[in-house]
Image (cartoon, rainbow, N blue to C red; front, side, top):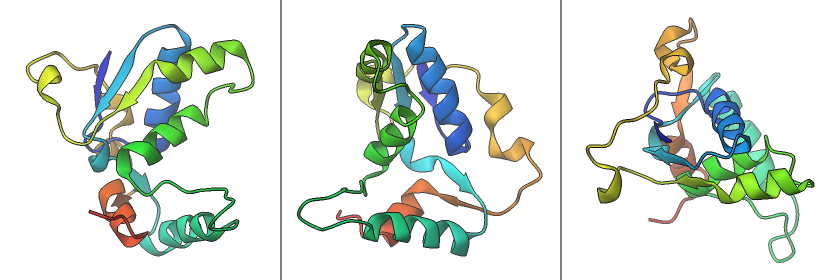
Length: 138
């Protein structure tokens, strides 16, 4: 299953992808940098800065700053990682920035229900913007 993540809400996308992975499907998420996180820009940034600064720089916990890794960590957070089915489902999830050549021209899953334009919330920040503010290295 291929999911185009453009303008999708990150939490809803994560729960949808986690359910599909638990069913045994291979989930490929493309355009991971275009996922949106709802809420005011200031509050979202404060929450993620607090997560980034938690722990020790050498011993962790470590915080991902690349878009595809942060999205995959969010999706795997919705899986039962202590059980065998959760570990198997984690291996079935792949996230990509942009559209890789092997997925061009292939059909994508219908995700109109989790699109940000279907909600009343007009405050959001894209994952690419958030990661660049958190110190993503180019």
